[in-house]
Image (cartoon, rainbow, N blue to C red; front, side, top):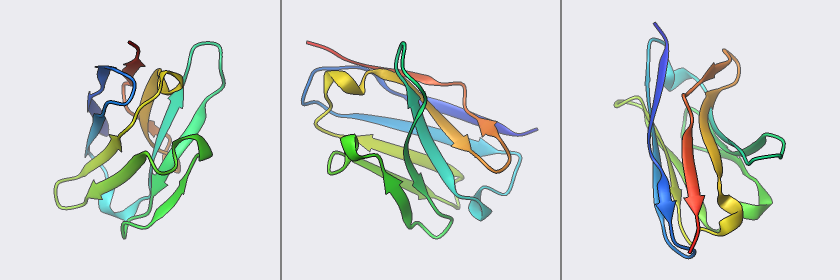
Length: 114
């Protein structure tokens, strides 16, 4: 059974930090590019970042460049998103995604507010 189980996130003050975690199981995690996506209320889905099996980053959306860092631990089947210097506009529901196989995590709410 394929599972992408997310943890982390929550509430942060502007300028603060949050970490998102995604634990993968049931498929060959180390073989696939993984992504983080987000969707804010009333807005379309945005692909925040991706990371290839070898750890190379595919992209960061312009609005998070220099603030977010994607990483992975293949032996542990873990995907991470380190979010630093967060802004109110980062408020969204964040998803861990394997796009080829169309696997999605359950979503984690991130709220940035003073």
